[in-house]
Length: 399
Image (cartoon, rainbow, N blue to C red; front, side, top):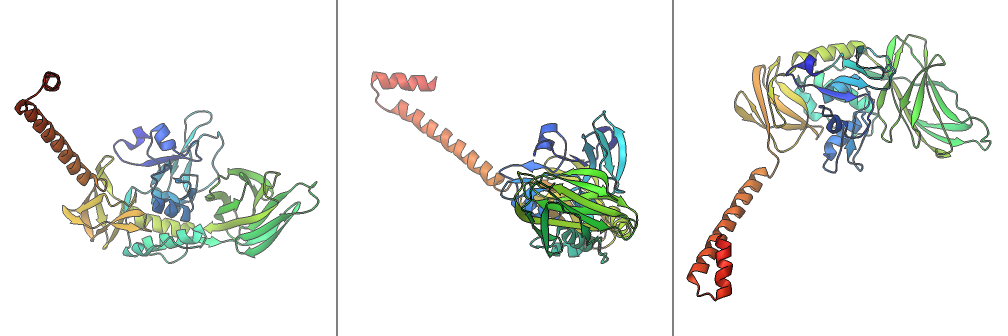
């Protein structure tokens, strides 16, 4: 990746985590983090758009997900070390490099730089919504691009094939299940969906204490998706019109005898994705210099708007456009954005932690006070009438 990217900044992630701090463990630029200082606003933002995240658990981390999530987090490369191909999608280049027998490198076909121009309307994006993460992604994508046609369309359950249990529908995507009294039968949940057109399907599936879900295509095994404690959007694959996609998970002794099921399946509109991607890509920032605390680059805006950065919003960030200080904004109360007028401009971002300047001033003053007190103490030793032991002590201190 470093050879491919040279001096350009890009983000990489594993298709599924080994630890919750893989970027720190392996030394790559990613997004996964487990830390008591994790910004809870960022955690909420990432959870709402469909990544595994928990405010109470001080964590957010990556799992192979939708193209929109990758766009707005700046993921360009995905490393998979399962030895098996990722679920088939048109959003990544399949197997661009076989690193070893088990490790495969993929490139995101819809990658965006760390900053890109969006419509001003993105400032109205809210995350305090109880809608599904697909609806929230639709909203984010529409506000950023100005395209009103939805990116994702819900696919309803065609029928079910549960075994050993009964599931009751509460509303779209929400079910309650309970095990039958006869527990000798194999117990699993199974939801079937019909692809009405040639399309890519994505799912969001959550059942307490269930660690994986199988994907079937026309009743044939397609893939197995590992489910961490925090649910997320994952690809089900590419389907032709009339094919059936199924999600099936076992209910074992470790699973609750009754509980809640959340299952959303949505079809991706590739036409909308391509149109929106080309629009956002055209306003991508060209990074000329970067470090941990500074980013410098050029951006061309077709119209007045906001340059969105896949960087957590913090008060320590300051921004200059063509040398003029501008006020930064928070998108979804979580991500950094800078207002930019139409035309070509240079943007410089700098980060100084909140309270850092005050801390430096206080530290300098404290050192100065200590030096002054030492000077006073030294003079007092010279001016006092001292006994022998006090003289020895002063002499030792002077040495």
